[in-house]
Image (cartoon, rainbow, N blue to C red; front, side, top):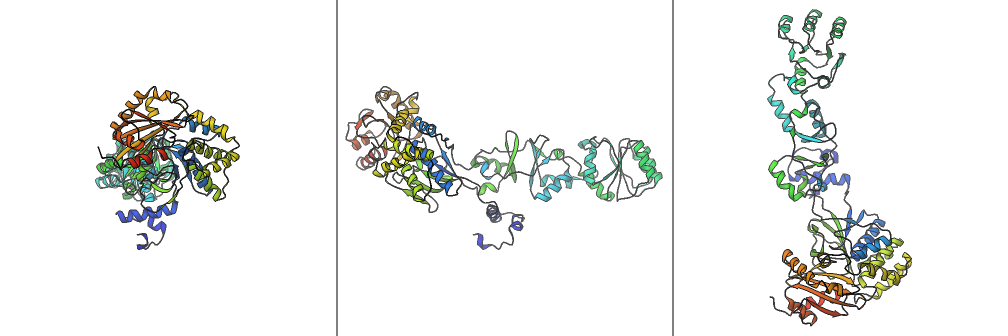
Length: 583
């Protein structure tokens, strides 16, 4: 749509006035062109991540970084013991933990370089608004804490309500404010931080009339008056004499004022303008909105939209620990810049991080079945029927002649060992094994020795609770009309799982009831015997019986030779669902 409009210059357009959605979208487009996209690309695996999910994120982020892209490895769950062992062995940091990808205030907030202090004058505020063309400006105290917000309408309202000279004593105005606002030259100095106590008096009539009006501590505005008149005014014990229009002051008047400790100021403006400028000496705190509606960087845009609609301000401060960190406008939330992600080791919506529908998916690198994530535009996908995503990632490095450092090679190797259970899984291919051998050489480890140590570190329930065991390496699948989750845990001795089977089944059933799943399956895979005890809760149990040709009336079945969820659990279930009648 952008080429439909004639644009004369970027700077000219960015500061154009007016509103409307069309104007906003064009300004946003040009602003993004000027600053470029600052968002990183998150490379992230599935929920409840396993070793392949974590290590493929790290490995593929390394590849993208080597190709000049701002890629960051991320995760959306807790790291298990096996993965922790691999990360610590190869001295690698854990990927960034992301709770979700929903757009937040931080994604649209603008850096706030323009603020005013609560003691600044309205004159200063007006100048700041004119230069910045902002409609609302945050107000802070001397420590930088947010204390209010002030808008153009607040300033305009103040202007239209002016009927005469304001009582500056009631407004907490200092002499320094008068000096700044009237752009005066100080001819006789005093304490500029002292608060004004008297009234403003314009000496326009006879000296007698003027003196009769005066009270001690008053401030008097005079034009070109005689020495006699000025002497009488000083004798009234005023606090400040403001000479307007650039008129000259006789030396004897300055001497007398200095003796009486009376401010004498000379301003180039005429008396009428000075009167208006004095009304602008009022501090900002007098017209600001105290305790303004403000947001935090991590607030969800979906949560703040209603607040914005209710209050209808143009801009809102963004604060963190009481400090102002930015501004967010109602316009900005119309089209937030989406998070950019690359999905590794999964491609199903149910396995993806929360908020994936609000993110921009750039690529998918995976070794699983296609699971139905939809994108708004064509993307790059790389999927192969191999045992591990890291097999794909490693070879993508080599195909592009990008060197794999020993630490990255060790992590990629770890994932292949994990996903293929040291090449025992039926998902393992010759390609996986050949890749692993090459990675072991680069990492400088004995493949079998390191592999057994890593698997041993991740096997067993350790100090895990029944809930943690039931959710270990958990993935969601849509099989026919059923929503099914399948967890997996590797053990050396399956008895430690069977001993707490009753507690596990209860947790799994509660999870189905709470989250709306039809079934929860837990694979307790015996690494030594190359077999799996499949625990299940929910319904229909006939799906288990039909898929594995077993008596499924209990809560578990024994599946010798079964180690792979991807190749030996999901395919039989997908076929069985076609043969059973819906419950």
